[in-house]
Amino acid sequence: MSIFEYDEKRELKLLRKAQFEYGRESLLKSKIITKLKKGKSLEQP
Image (tube, rainbow, N blue to C red; front, side, top):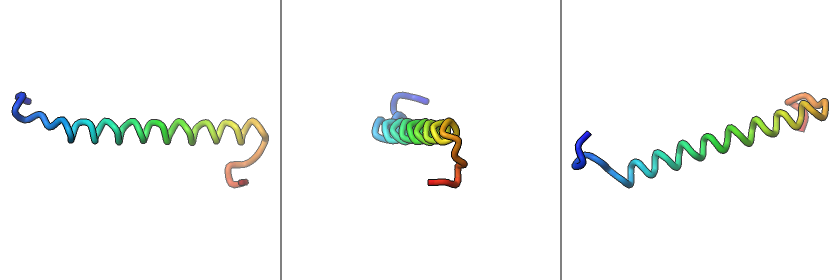
């Protein structure tokens, strides 16, 4: 990739999307672990 092909806005958008997905996955994992520690099934609210 040459410097002329670099699109900063696109790269930042992709980075934010990846960070959002990582945070979302971490939150879901945390919630699952908490439920399991409390002895609840994943279907219970």
